[in-house]
Length: 405
Image (tube, rainbow, N blue to C red; front, side):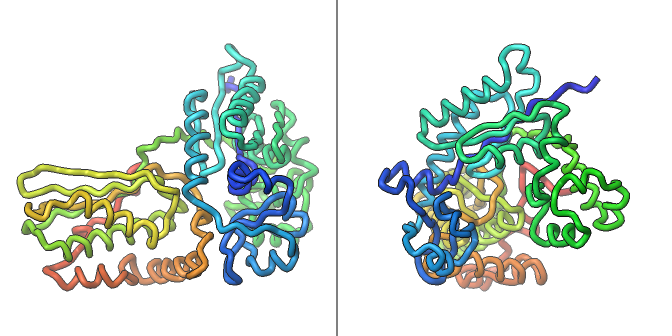
């Protein structure tokens, strides 16, 4: 007989807004917009008070301000948000036998088997209350037998509440909800389902799975299973050591700082592209230097979560400057991004000077079509002209937590 699972999904409510309200209590109860503060800016997060005006994430800031002129616009501080994300992570890590950090403000916890020692609902509630007490941040959770139902339940629990869906009641809970509540249903999929006359989950539950397969292929089968509360996906243990890295050993040892900086820049830029392509953010940067006498030095720095070239490359250059000994020949250099979490580039939506999300999207599309090195910064091109440049020695960077064969 299969073991009954107990999976909790915890999600920090309007995370960026909640962090700002901890810093300034005058913001409580007011419509808040966080993101780029210029006309070209985009809303990265908004308060529930602002959502009443039809405002949502990724909306142009100008449109959001037109809908709610009295909203308070805040540029955002990724360093503060990363700090609080780590605080919550530390609390969950201490209290949980198995947890997955799926983004900077979202967690899955596997409490399977803990009913023998604690009531899972009570233990989860106590953990939620501890997070609220120690960080001041509101957080909601859903508890059920699997990740999909728990995630949907969290959405129904918000703001700042909790819901348990008992085993056997998954379909009844899901039935009246919109199909948009299913995690893998985006706007295009929703429109396809609407064309089939399906707007609520109940008709999808009643539909033969073969019909969904004919209409939408394998994706249709997955949607049908989730609609019926079927999800055996495991909680994957979060490990701060998950990393993506690359390094180069030189054919001839060098002390050429221009060459070294150029190659490190190219490494940092390519690794950032790999992060964005895998929908990851990094919270730690490491630079490695091995000298001709085989002495190896590494220096790392905890950083706000990001996948942006313009934030990561300066950090890599700063670590190199602090590590590099100009009197010794260099045999090997490398860059590693670790403390990876899933998530898009929302933490980089606070700038005004450049529309970085659009810029990176365009650059990445070129790289996907024409190759990783189709677009590269000038400093990398400068290094390319010096002695057979090849930042990866012919090897692509490896995502150590999920190495591709």
